[in-house]
Image (cartoon, rainbow, N blue to C red; front, side, top):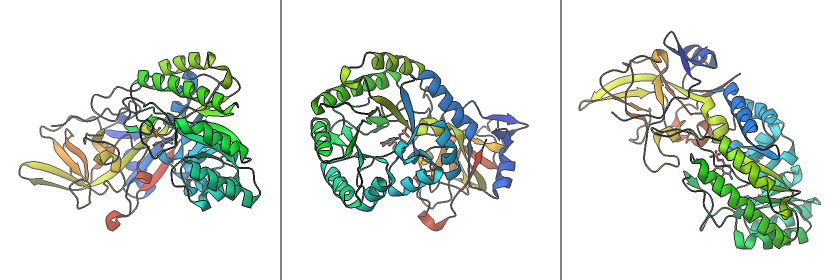
Length: 410
Ligand SMILES: Cc1ncc(COP(=O)(O)O)c(C=O)c1O
């Protein structure tokens, strides 16, 4: 038997049925029409945003990285909960605008922006976080053709790492941003080229559960932003401090305690260097805001044995929920929290089972030798922490199965 990650406390049982947002999992599947289904509970997202605002200094804005979950109805609701969206493509630009986010509250990061994407972003008036000097030159040339003043910030590849992060996005040779020692030069060039310089974007990493590592990285980020601004000789309107808040997906993970991060940041911002006195600050979060809100529901098609091991075969799989199969940013495969939704809270059977998806590949494992109550065809399996990097971060076209359904509650 292998352990699984902790089920978020918001999920409870009523007469053996998993409740999501107060509704039974089986009736949600009926409402959506079929499995596989992602259900997102907006109340959980709103509670996370409230928790963040209560813990963080007032001077700090909250941005949502929509890559974590760009489901249209959820994005629309997010426009009221956060101060800005971070996007990573022309497609996400359209989603952000369709959701009703004001263009001057959208920032566009990501390497390899095509000319048509830069053009759409400049035309719409969103801030582009430049990833290279070449991208800066292209943005200025496109803006001139459009007769627009582009809003440009510089994404900095910091000269430090976010320790303990699941995905390192800064420190060392990276395809993201401009190395710290060249960032001030790029800012000076774009100011000289007539851009509206919006400041710095410094995103060191993602999925950290160590508050001290985040505190250390934020202090280093403020120090770096101050040094770079001194070198430019101008005050950055915005310093985006990145994010990195992680979720407890796996056995032994301890949920991130954010109040001490807020207290440390409050002090760090109070005593910030003069060159940043007039700047605003933002944090950019994806998974921490939306991850816990989501449950992936998939129906058991078959239960079979092979050489003494029981396999529970479901109608979903890694084509919808790649992360739970251990193939999205993890080195070692570990079990996400998983349960039988229609026997939620029941005692586990004596023998562990392996829950596999319907794809004909050995990597389509959603639960590896997990302890579940007895399972039969027709049962509903729930995989938790499915609100981030689920439907939009999985290879849905692989093997031609239907796309998952999605439902927003609350
Ligand atoms: C630039 C940028 N912003 C935000 C995020 C969101 O990270 P997370 O969902 O872990 O908060 C990422 C993740 O890769 C990113 O690259």
